[in-house]
Image 1 (cartoon, rainbow, N blue to C red):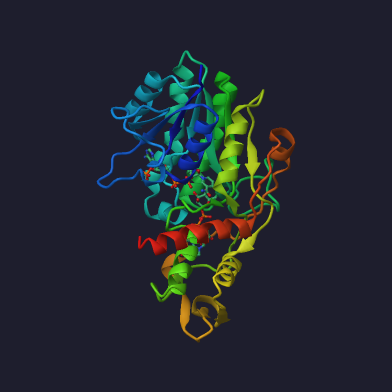
Image 2: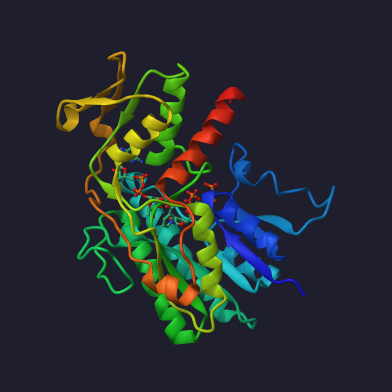
Length: 345
Ligand code: NDP
Ligand code: GDR
């Protein structure tokens, strides 16, 4: 019989890539979506069909990770073999604005799922979407599974609770539960307010004269950026092992935001000349138009300055390695933006 997967956070970037990957593997995939006043299924519209019209192996249910009743009822009803908890208020900067909600969803949400699994008669495997933000003010470089944590935001602190409650339920109730400690991963489907998508989108628009300027925050933080397509494979692999464990997933390479902008601009044939310092630093194009400007509103109360991971454990045990590098990632993102610009999105 086909395996059943249940994905919390199915409408997000990773939910979309993971659903497609699992469907290709022959899974029946159930996803939880939230009710919104506008449609939020854009990233999965290509795989969803209304079962009243045409049946396939992909089903959606309303639910919310902050609502214990819905979490319990759905898990009882679906009886999945595997649960992937990708649901979160995932924006670090926004977590400073809505810390209580972020903690409810990103910390207690995980507890709600684990509690339902622990009460289930069926053995359900569990994947928790942990984050390199838990390393925060990094205690060593590169970061691996043994690096001490030091979160720098309500988001990071909430994810840290989820990490340890997952370990605790694994040890207390023998649940097959894994923490993925994933570093930043991007794609054409990345949310528009994350820095890579914001940069690629803005520079494509600037190139085609649909936008004049990109307003940005800290140009000097460093990130280890991978491609979501590669990272969802690692999530699945974790749940196929003999024993549950926690894994760092990353590329092992890091770049500043400024380098990311320069790479993207170069690919688009825009030559950026940087002038000024600090908040007054600006980027000018070849016609001396100011196309990039720093704004204090995009800086955070506490920053994670530098992240760079070590995926040796995943390579050894999961036989996982990233296929994409920063350039194939940016190429993929630019291709998508330009296609959609021409479609007049
Ligand atoms: P997205 O923000 O794209 O997706 C988040 C998903 O969670 C969306 O489907 C969203 O629904 C859903 N969601 C948010 N709040 C709730 C709630 N209260 N109840 C149910 N669903 C909810 O994130 P990504 O796909 O990028 O990331 C997936 C997970 O991995 C997240 O937990 C994130 O924190 C974590 N992560 C991400 C990394 C990355 O670089 N992308 C790196 C490390 C960890 P809706 O569409 O309705 O908003
Ligand atoms: P991050 O990603 O906080 O690492 O969290 P984001 O793309 O938001 O920021 C990366 C870095 O870029 C700097 N930055 C800006 N960021 C945004 N969003 N907008 C700007 O205008 C801007 N200018 C500079 C930030 O200060 C930061 O240093 C992502 C999320 O997906 C989390 O859910 C996930 O856990 C981590 O990655 C790993």
